[in-house]
Structures are given as C-alpha cells and as structure tokens.
Amino acid sequence: MKEDRVSNPITIPDSLCSIIPSIPNYASYTNSTNTCSGTMTNWSELLPEILNAIARKLAYYEDYINFLCVCTSWKTCTTITKNIIQHLPSRIPMLMFHEYSHQNRTFFLLSNGGIIRKLPLPEAYRQRCVSTHGWLLTTGEQEFYTKLVNPVTRTQIHLPKLYMFEELYFDQDEWKYYGFSMRKAVFTSSNPLASDPSFRVVIIWGNTLGFCRLGDDSWTRVDGWEGHVFDITYHKMRTRLYVVCTTLGTIYECEIGNDVLCPVTLSRVTTFPGKELGCLCVQWAYLVEWGCNSLLMITRERQYFKKHDDEYARYGPYRTSRFQCFVFGLDDGKWSKIASLGNKAVFVGFNSSFAIDGGEGVKPNCIYFTDDLYEPYRGLPDGGGGDVGIYHMFSGRIEAIFGSQQQSVFGYSPIWLQASTLPVIKGIK
Image (cartoon, rainbow, N blue to C red; front, side):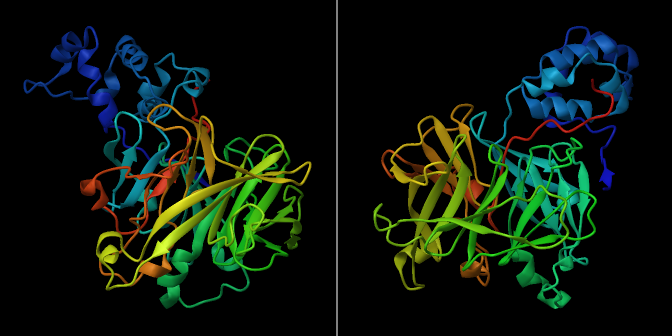
C-alpha cells in the first residue's frame, strides 16, 4: 500500500480566512511581524495561543482537517485531539461536480444554505470517480490505475490496476467508453487507514464485480449472478456483501472477508415479488443496509423523451419520475413496502447508497438522487447528468437541489460524498 500526502504549507483554506482576523491579540501579533504592507510574512510562525484560539472557533469536522493540514506547526502547536474532531458535525454530504480546472473541483454543500466551494484536488484531475464513505475511487487512462483519494485531506491509497480483471484487455482508444464503466464502490469498513485486516474495496466495473485488499496485486472476481448488476452494499452487522440484479430485482449475497485468491461465488437470497407489491418492473434499484437484520431496496423509474418532445429540450433524454421503497427481512425472508423513511434521508447515484438522519441541511423522509446513467447522453454536445433532485416520499414531489446557475456546471453527473471516518493524521493523539 502506498500512501501520499499533498499539502501546501502557505495555503490558508477559505473557511479559516474569515475567522483568523477576529481572534483576540491577532492584530497586535501581525503588526509586529508583518511587512509594511500588512501582509503576513510567515503563517507558520503564529503563536500557539493564537492557533488554539482559532481552533476553538471551528465548528465543523472539515474545517479542523483543513486547519491541521496547513503546515506542521499548526498541527503540532494546538491542543486539538482526535476525540474532539470525531464528535464534530460534518458539512458532508455534499455534491462534487465535474472537473473545474486541473487543480480544483467544485463542491455544493447542503449545509450553510447550500454554498458552493472550489477546492484543490489535483489528485482527481482527468480521473473517472465514484465515491464511498467520503472517499473517491478514481481510475485514469494511464494503464487503468486505480486509487482511493480523500477529498478533504487529499490522502491517496493505490489499488491494483483494473486490467487485472482478465476480460478487460482492451485498447487505450476504448478508454472513453470503458472509463464510464466503473459505476459503484463500497468498503467493508468505513476507514481504509485503520489497519483492519478485514477491509476490502468492492467495485462494479461494467458487468464485472470484484474486490481487493489494500496491498493486493490484483482484483478478486465475484461470480454467480444472472443479468445486470444494479447496486451493491455491505451489511456490517451481517458481514455480507449484497448484490441486486436484473429487472426481477434478484438479491444475492457472499462473504468476502476470507483470505482468498480465487473467484468468490454469490448465492441467491430472494427474488423481489414485484407484482405482489405493486411494482411490475424494476427499471433500476439500489440497496441500503436498513437496521440490524434488513435491507432497503429502492426502485427508480425514469420517463424517457424523444428529441422532438418539448420535455427533451428542458430535461434531456429522460428524467426521474418516481421512487418506491421496499424492506426485505434477512431473518424471516419477508418483503414489505414502506411509504415513509421516517427521519432518514437516502442518497443514491454514482456513490455507495447510504442513509443518514435528517438535519444540518438534509431533509428527512427524502431521497437525494443524482444521474447514474451515461449511455443516453454520451453523444450530446453539452454532456448530461442533469437528472438531479430531491424526491419527497410523502407527496411524490421532486424538488430541485439548486438553481440554473449551478446546473450549468454539469458536464457529467455530480457525485454525493458521504461523511467519512477521521483519517489518521500523524501528530494528533
């Protein structure tokens, strides 16, 4: 496993710039150390009492991480502890938009009234990305390297090359197509830096399913299903990988924690009784761990338009029309349809599907969705990815997440980022 840290010791994050001037004694300190123009000559020389006063004003997990990564002196001179950081609220979930420049990515934060930020993330430049547990899994054209990137700390972990799947020997000229084939990734535990021997990264690449451990030279295949793979989820309480496939909504499972180097075979668990529950066809489906002994399956219906339709000019090739939610009991094997998610909100798209409690800008009993189809709009001159919104379970209403100004940044689908476990940062106890 290779791990890289990239940081700029003189870059002060935007979230800190508005706080620093309000610190008591800051002005007297800067007047004695600044040039005649009033510009700080060396941010790393701030006194420890000033740094701790700044740190106490930070209210969000991401701001603390940014603070610690400014430079070594900021990290070592403060009284911040890992325990303090882990109990702070997070601005995540947030949307990461398509590439803004070779150095930056654009993020839309649901908290703070839905603000837009541009953050440096050169590690994801010209990379195809999916997300899970707050990390990005990226792959690029250069020999199909894959790596994990934390967009907050910019930590990198290298993974096996994707062409280690034996059926993926293809021409570099076909990258534009195959680059879109990486659709999902999940972790078997939340923190890849925790030295957990059971940790695995699982991916869907086209219609291939596989996983690896950190440090592996190749991916291990998962076989044994029929049809098309819609979604995957790892049930932590059951320690099982669950897969939903085909228009019938068949669910499979397997255990991937053993030290195996041969293909793993899925076992069929159940087939969704769609007719009995009022869902005649499963166009698309998602899986979420739902309590200790259940899975939540969400079906998604899209309405498709032809080029001469009025809706085509407004929405593109399609738009989401409805979601339905069903719970499968892993103990009793029974299915039930639910009309409410309670205080939960679910996030689906090119991310591992996840549910969180409402609050901090997140509306309960809603499904936050992004566009997770590529084929219908790959040839459009302006790209696509605009099938994004908030589905209200109570009324069936679809609400826009943001206005037309933010919508203009689409070229490909934005990606939800989930809150992650605190990455290990050396020097913080």
